[in-house]
Image (tube, rainbow, N blue to C red; front, side, top):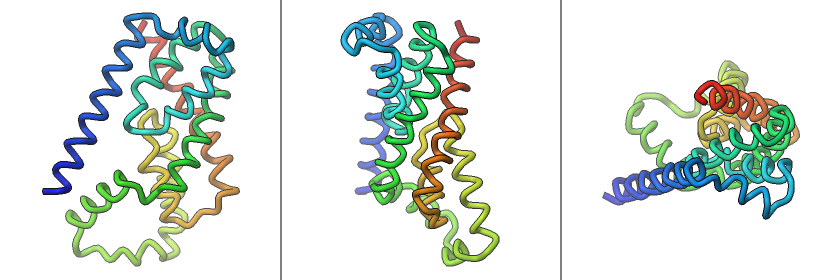
Length: 182
């Protein structure tokens, strides 16, 4: 019962994020944001921070795509990726947050016979970081990728450059798809 309520609450938050994305695109809020912040780079950095979370990825994606039309797409991707690293580090510190608990509840319920101590076997030590990096590069929320990196016990000094590279690729993908959709 408690899990169902939390999932419903999460769905509402995602819906709010999508609504904010629609408002960004319909009411030209990006130009207003640029007037307030004064630079495409700072706006890209802030958009990147919000690019990592399930609840804020929709408005952040719209923001980053729109910012690419105001400035250089590579610059937007670089500063967006830097912001996403900050967002990923926040997620990494709180990798045991509600969403991770919800995901692990589903994983455990679906795979009761799987022993989770297998994560520590040699095969999983290199598969988990690769899967985590893959999920971070996708233009989807990074929580699952960060959770996999956390499960792999990867050191923070490796996660930061990996997060930057994968988020740079992810932001470029979003910008490219956004420009194709125009």
